[in-house]
Image (cartoon, rainbow over all chains, first blue to last red; front, side):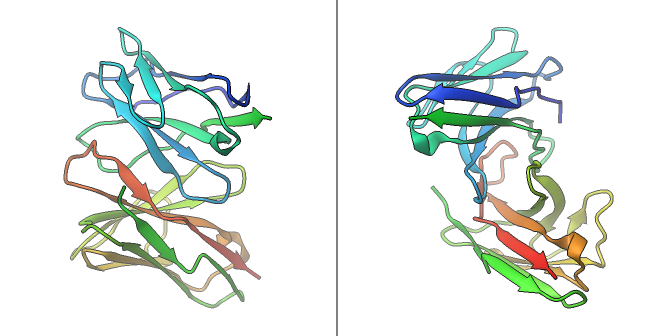
Length: 110
Length: 117
């Protein structure tokens, strides 16, 4: 799987939007962009994924750059429960497993 | 969403003993499950891919004789850490994929924290 680059950590205030960036300049045409998050002492949970178009679900929005070399996970109103490590992962049909990078540790301040 | 459970949630054992960790998909069948290991402040590292009815596929550097994986049914995979040593202390997490498409989301278990004394 191609590599992704994320900031090590970010801070946000409660009730404010959060934009988590991810760079994936070597993305291939068949790579989907997946986001998972891991709360402390828990297994990761799926957040969202997309291929080319922006995606919205009840948890978040995913904005994908036109050249697909970067993407942004958007939490519209951060809550304290959103404090977690967020992983941006590229995944395609050729492989089954997910390859986790370092992720971004999001801290939410009340 | 689909639910994956793990048992036990935490285990403490003496050096040299073996520990079995169970991973179950509760409301779906999973032909493929994955086992990860996570050390403190580190990311998840894939250990092996568990395939129902066949041998597991291990990642480079993971000893298959030390980490025994059995996927005897479509809802259960087990990881046995044999002759555990303190360096095997870690957070072990399993996941299962819903569907056969490679891009389908994966569902993760809550993890098992292993401490080897």
